[in-house]
Image (cartoon, rainbow, N blue to C red; front, side, top):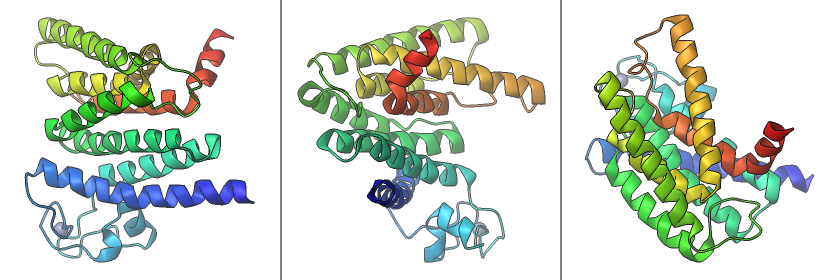
Length: 259
Ligand SMILES: [Zn+2]
């Protein structure tokens, strides 16, 4: 029984923290002070139950009382992402100091997931402090992988360097071939952050997963003809999903791949 209660409780906590993180991200994005949450379209103050997009949906209050528009889907995805990821990590390895590091590393990922989906931006005021935090703590505590058994002080730094260099080159190539493409400067910093989170050599698994997910996404865009390839979907969410999957199932994915 207890095996279910703890992950569920942590999941609920993730929902609350996710809600706060999303509002913080939107406040940073709009360069305003954190005020009472309001409708992004008409600025009507939201009812407390609407502060969380998930809670609003489940209580049938997903629409703004002022303009009747549906409150943003990215908010909902961000809240659910953190709740699910926190629950899964704790269900897998239980609570420890390292689990807390993993949980902390998922908060900036949640914030970027939302801002990138909303306005295709990776705000440097979110990702740069997150990167600095991860690099500093990684040197003394190792990468934010839940089932890590041993690590070296340089793995975080090397991971960040790999993420940075790979995406720096990709952006150069992308701009040379397509002009302004799907990848932006923000994705480079995000890739460096992801590299710092999972460390070297797992950064490679994260990036391969991101490219695989991005390929599937591009294929869906092509098949459904929902928009121009390359500009239709921001790339950040793929990088973030690749990172979270590596944090949760790094070994399982490798075993599945080599089988
Ligand atoms: Zn409204």
